[in-house]
Amino acid sequence: MQHWVQHVYDHSPVAAQHLMISLYGWKLSRLRFGGSYERYLNELLRSQYYSKAELTELQNERLRALIRQCYDNVPYYARLMRELKLIPNDFQTAEDLTKLPVLEKETVRGNPELFQATNFRERASEIVSTSGTTGTSLRIRVDVEGRRKNYAFFGRLKRWAGVDPLARSATFAGRAIVPVRQQKPPFWRYNLPMKNLLFSSFHLSERNMPAYLKRMRDWNPQLIDSYPSSLAILARFGLEHGLEAPHPRAVITSSETLPEDQRDVIIRAFQTRIFDQYGSAEQVCFISQCERGRYHVHPEYGIAEFLPTPAGEPEAAARIVATGLTNWAMPLLRYDMADLAVPAAGECDCGRKFQIVKQIVGRLDDLVQTPDGRWVGRLDPVFKGLQTVRRAQIIQEALNRIRVLIVPAKGFSSAQQDSIQHELERRLGPDIEYVFELVNEIPVGPGGKFRAVISQIERTRSS
Image 1: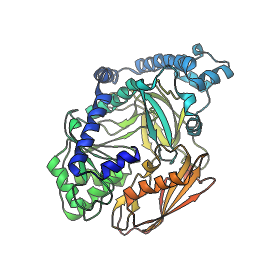
Image 2: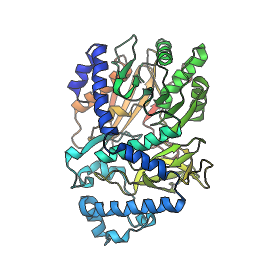
Image 3: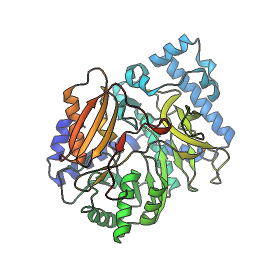
Image 4: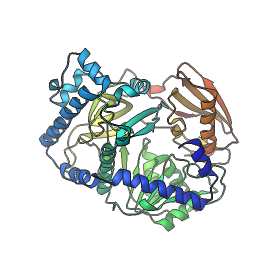
């Protein structure tokens, strides 16, 4: 969101904020669920029970068409294939993808225009920014139909969870929908066209959480869609203080790794099932849990490879390298997700012949604790859209002191540093000293996993 728009929003009355979010929700609803969305969803409801051979042929057919698109219209791949003396007919099955090198995030981040298909105009696509767990910003162009295909997969997941697509939902995510200066309820805003109540993930203090739980009970959502860290904080508080939580039909968690302790406390507090999912704005891989609780790679979404990890990483874990089949405006082939997973053999008794994943290893950030008693996770959105930040890390050294390490790219300026601090203050508050340090590199942690947020303080309360 542009700064002037955010400024107007932050200083508007709550009723006006409800209206602005609802208008934006109406726009998103048309974009995501209009046009061919229902056709895509119905196709997915049929293909989920295809045989393994049928799924393989479906993947290969779509891959052949995508390779032709890359060869004819995507500058990066047109040049790469010619350098490797490859033509589209050299790619008949998913196994043929190994003829291409693995694509690193940094290559896409540094040259996004080379990956954008020349046969897609701006009006037929949109830019989606992502920062991911590495704090590295990417700008991905997604075609309109690809976006609808993406949400059709989420629609199928909701069917797995037994959720009515038109039912009420509640969301905890990374948008700063409530100004950080606000000290009293409501800490939520309405998206009326989508029957969605958005809760702030940045006001979860002991003083505020009773109001959160009461509003959630009154709203009585059929689905809660949330970062697991936010919902786990609320669940633990409710259990410790004897405050009842709503009992939705399902909770869908995403954007962070879901540790077992968070899963357990959410299930106990909300008395429901959790369907965890893994995806990305790059639209190359979609993994989610089925009704039996097993993680599945959705084969119609993309082709996932699980490659050996470098020395020092968990022996059973593998790098997720994926080729997306849904986005023709900026297709990515053999794209390294920079996340780890543990693949498993065998089939699930849910009846689907999808690849099983035992565990998603990546995406685990620490929580930041604020001086006024709030716990905040998933801070990577503060770097969204900044092409001049190669990598960033947030280190909490004390309750009132945070160090921000930045590996700058060409063009990074003090104004952009001020913008990052502004976004941090909006989420964490102004009563914290923010120290910025420009560095040449940020080392990875144990096991080769980069941690975007590190807390060095002793917890005053378990989270």
